[in-house]
Image (cartoon, rainbow, N blue to C red; front, side, top):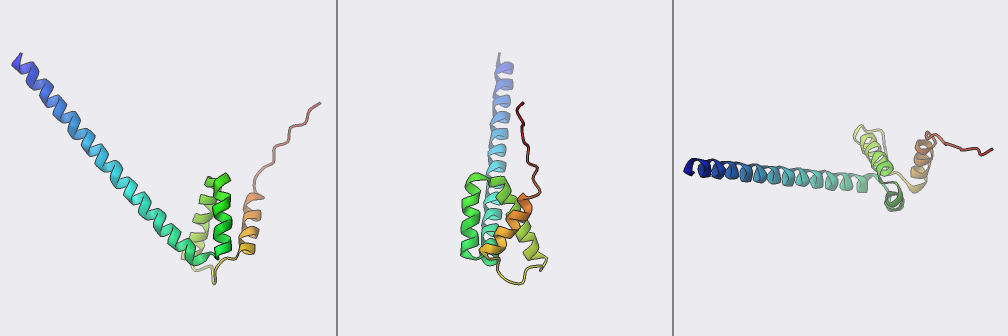
Length: 111
């Protein structure tokens, strides 16, 4: 029985170590995600006027994936030097119109 107990003890230690490693990896990933979000927020503050940021924040409540896509596009434009000044609310509206215009409208006709 001592061999069986020893095997159980080793297995338990191995499981505990794995759980600790997974927890540490998850914590590290969360820190990286938070750091990325903070950098993204700082960049957006530099490239958007307060009104445009407010519009994106309101839109995020209803369409978070869409706003994420727009933010990444804006950051990419800024990093490649294609933007000369801050994006105003009107410019953002136009960009949103162009991007959302690409969607397909599905209409159901009843007979």
